Length: 272
Figure 1 (cartoon, rainbow, N blue to C red):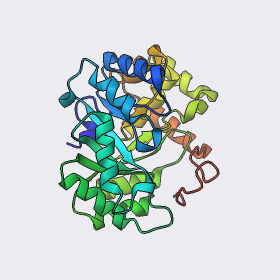
Figure 2: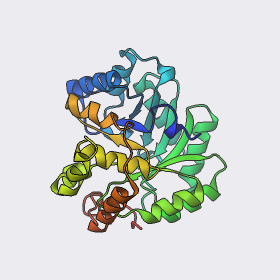
Figure 3: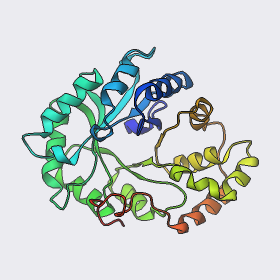
């Protein structure tokens, strides 16, 4: 089974943009709530604090699924592996469970960074590898470029954005998606449909959105500093959305609300 769906790892805790006591307290609450998958990145500037919070927590390293991501500035052959080793030092671990390329190379060929990613895995710096913010065609190309399986493509995924082309590419390549901005940074709460559906299950609007994502075959990364939300975002496995409610939410993807646009991230690829 893909590591992203083992144990409780399909419900991960994202650490961006947390730092300091807010990060430490959120991780402590997440561990207590049952989270065992944690996501960070070189770009976030919080690897050391994340590593410290997890190392000082009650859960053994072997029970955690730790993800970090390599910044595109480190994609050169001389910089890539040293940057991964620096991440491991910061995270207080000998390996990460999942190492991702945070973005496609800016205006360049995806092959060199993918081969360096596989090298990091071959050297034991990462047990599994994947990508982030790849387009559907990039997913297909990546599968042909390297031999090692890619365990995920982490992308913006929520009910206000149609990602059917990425889902199709995931089905074709065997590279499942994982979500960031899972509640569209709160934008979903402007639409009463989610709370209306939730009332029928005794669940919140956020829980309905997150359950929809899981039922689309996509693993989750959620972040909050509020203990009640951290716990609620994990409490998703005791209900199943009906096919009718799934279809009602599917229709919301035509809203076309994208957070990670070229206006926000100029180096983003041309999205599907």
